[in-house]
Amino acid sequence: MRERFMVALIADIGGTHARFALVEGAAVSEPVVMRCAEHAGPAEAAAAFLAAHGGGVRPDRAAFAVASPITGDVVDLTNSAWHFSIEAVRQTLGLERLEVVNDFTAVALSVRHLEAEHLLKIGAGVAVSGCPVAVLGPGTGLGVSAVVPDRQGRWTALATEGGHVTLAATNAQEDAVLEWLRRRFDHVSAERVLSGPGLVNLYQALAGLRGVHPVYGTPDAISQRGLDGSCPLCRDALEMFFAILGTVAGNLALTVGARGGVYVAGGILPRMRDAFAQSAFRHRFEDKGRFRDYLGPIPTWLVVHPQPAFAGLAGLVNEAD
Ligand SMILES: Nc1ncnc2c1ncn2[C@@H]1O[C@H](COP(=O)(O)OP(=O)(O)OP(=O)(O)O)[C@@H](O)[C@H]1O
Image (cartoon, rainbow, N blue to C red; front, top):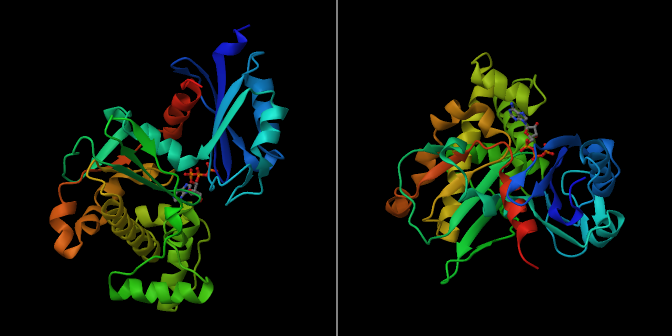
């Protein structure tokens, strides 16, 4: 049996899946994906993971990344039924320390350490060292964060809810889509469009505006038919998705001064990396009138690492108390 104090538990808890792994020093085990709906909460899922894959270890510390804001002890996952007390989970799992951070805070902590094979550069630009780095990613929701350096060269990751900013339109077609969506939602945030469910919203809005019956009901059905060209409405929804993501990424870069670059993560885009790389994303990222010259030199990358939050979580559990 491995020595008890050497092993830590990390988990990336999304709206649909929780991914668990063990950390021993710099080594991170192969992640195990579990469906949230099959477990009552993170303590139960973690216990099931340890029973099946832990090899008898009892971790004494853990770090969880969750797809929701962390404002106190009680965590209510935005896109799932899980609702838990951090302290109760710590006690149930017999942990000395449990850190719970927003999932995009963990991604933000890791992006500067990703290898070239895990990144696909989109467009031109060169990172300015020592400048903030921004991260956003469409998945079940839209995660947003940034890492900011201090004068000693230490980096702090921001915990933000930037996915819920109000979405702005940049042309007449987007004006019409937004107006259509406003009739359905009391607030049309960026996440209402830039997420898996958001792609469905976009598709339904375009269908409604064109007087066409929407046939497809899931993000993967829409993206698949958009990519293979068999459904023009799906293709238009997907192209609009990429373009609006460019606008929102450019807004984020301006807001946090992300001259260190912008990383696009999340589970959707790595599945369509070529289409994304060739899309209007980069043009729309730079398309900011007088601030085109500010955005043009900022590099943008697609993160194709399967578990980008894990490097950030491993760093957290290895930090000194
Ligand atoms: N091929 C695809 N095209 C478009 N959207 C997809 C595709 N496959 C999955 N999705 C959507 O991606 C979202 C899941 O994103 P992601 O894999 O980043 O998960 P997450 O937000 O971390 O949540 P979880 O980890 O719980 O799945 C879901 O809305 C899903 O419908």
